[in-house]
Image (cartoon, helix red, strand yellow):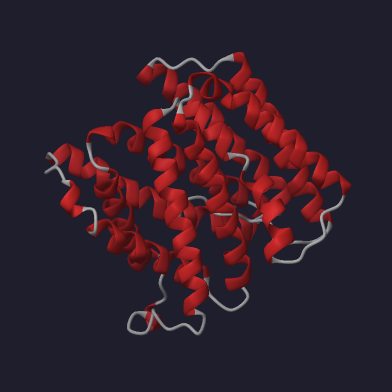
Length: 294
């Protein structure tokens, strides 16, 4: 029998693997419109939630909530984040996008001052500064060549940061599955508005792979939640940075992408910054679990 901490590690590892493969498929799907990939993420994410997460007694009233407007704000910020990360994954090296995405806790720290009236101490401000230096180092090629795509992972961080804030507010009354359900539903609905931009009929193989974007995204967030349920956040959160290892391996063997020394140095600074922020929030006994693009 596994201990609770061991279960937490296992679920976190499964979550990282699922997110990494999902990112891989999104990058591979560059021949399909972003809106079409969003549809598969939303629709099959809904399918996963209904089959494996939603309690049976809530099948016929799953949509009931007293905080609809807050769900709306969470969905809008989540949509901005997921579109930005999809565009970034298609146009930048995988390791670069993953490295910048680690900066989400940095932006969440800043936004919590304005939206949650939280006080941020010296350690976390230093962590924010270190993190921004890391982002500047990673993004330097984009500044030099005026590559606009470097801005998309940063937009993702902003969107995900506000997602974390709204989830922190929602989680006091709403189950995690309902938050994810509204988001997956919103992705599915919004994706239909991209139909006039042209969708491509996928082959059977591509249909399976595109469907896996939603299935993997749904399971990844489920396993992430389970990880935080069974284990202490301080123990399992550092494991999330294995995603960079997977990104480097996938990027090298599939697209022949070799991360530069500056990318790795910047990623190290961002990771150090994020760990400092996580540690300080744990000391202050704050909620720190942040989903990705659920």
